[in-house]
Length: 175
Image (cartoon, rainbow, N blue to C red):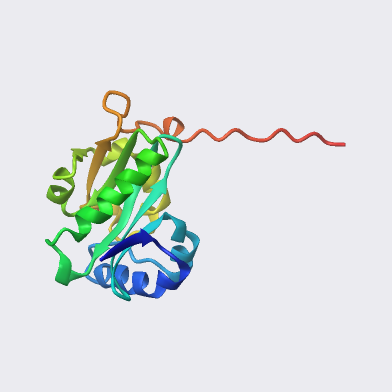
């Protein structure tokens, strides 16, 4: 099996895989537009020409990113495909010198084997304002927030949106 960054030609297979889990209510559905817009976030796992797994590393600031849209073909679950994808994202996050990663999941045991710990989702508030608002489970979310320190002692869950993202505004001079 080959692990690589996603390309535009992978989008139909990624869409089918992710949305098969979304139909079961265990992932957020994604659109072709969303996957096209975020294709650079994704790493895929291929078995020949068949896409059998994908996962995205989505940045939320200079120190933290979310692992999202982790999907593995059911026939390969438990065979290390998910682990390979998460380890690839961890490696990518370290290349970008990130302090921490987080994810929202229904399988915290899988993530705990890879160094993640459970945290209160309220400690990661910006996430709720982006994707969670459109989720049908927004008012009764049952996903579990997990967090992984990449730099022990430096990383921590984010308590405020201001700690997560500070965007300096450009100064415009009228002429």
